[in-house]
Length: 229
Image (cartoon, rainbow, N blue to C red; front, side):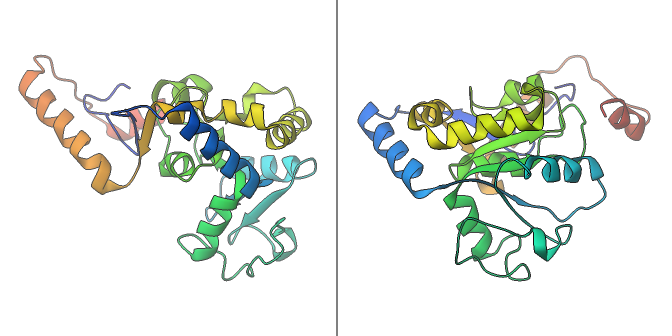
């Protein structure tokens, strides 16, 4: 992070006070693996970044993705959940969204920009509800720097969308492989809501204001931001 105060910009990984026992972890994995559909889900409202829409349409040729939002035509709104509500009812912050997030094994946490530190709440929320985020935008190392270990799948990890789809299907049908993306839950928690992350943000800000001897400033904040994209 190049900013002077950057902790918990959109979310944060925190070490648990007490790790889960193997018994608790295995119980959680069994429950999640059995109740979740082997599919990805995506809610998208910003239609301008065409690259991620193209990626979605390429992936869904090989792997089931339930997608919703104004960018997705009704005939593309398909889910393995037979009782899914209509497109107009299934939107962000609805009961339908919560249902989809908690009954699908993966979520397309595709960022709208590829800026270095632009990893938004969609990534952290995916982790917090128990799904595995499939990410694109910033490079893998930018996610790895702030995320729990082995907690996400980057689209660039695979040479083609077909290879990625094969991997998703394998992970989604193999409990052992699925569990490897959740081992971190024994040792870490993630937070993204303001009430949880604000104490960390202000604590860092106060620390920086009282200890930083050399200050960084930018004459043109727009130029600085665009350099990262």
